[in-house]
Figure (cartoon, rainbow, N blue to C red):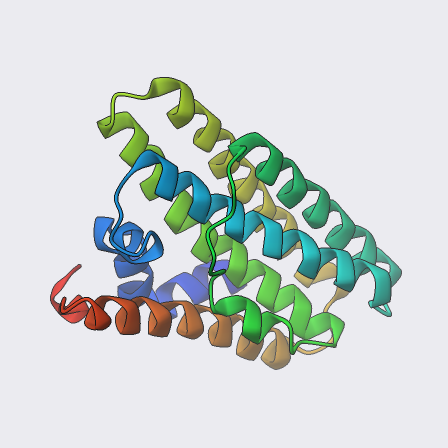
Length: 199
């Protein structure tokens, strides 16, 4: 199952491309393209990720997976501290999907997809602060980007080592990417923007 990350990217090539576009950042910030709004969106995601992974670390039946989820919680907590902003009111909808996962296989797949989707957003945030002539904050977000890239590798390895059912892992990962893309589409349509014309 070592190719799960590549196959996930291939299967969702167009949605992931759109989730990595400037319009996706526009959706995440509710159309408020300011440094404060970008930091608030990042803080909201980090806060809800911390809570989710803390919960998984506390109750996952697989000790190795629980330790991995604890590490993910610590990283998300550090991201919230690093961003140093009041969280936006709304966290990403993908966490409603992730909250429903209660098996190790589902959680590993979901965590992989969450890292992939979050990486797309953070890459846009780095670009935003570069364009905003704020190199210090851009470097802060590069740290988040690097951590998420590392998580993709770590989670792909963990899936190889710990998962029992490839199909369950993949179904969970697909559900998270689809939820992220659905929210992107619905948010932009609510703003009167046609997301499917944006690549």
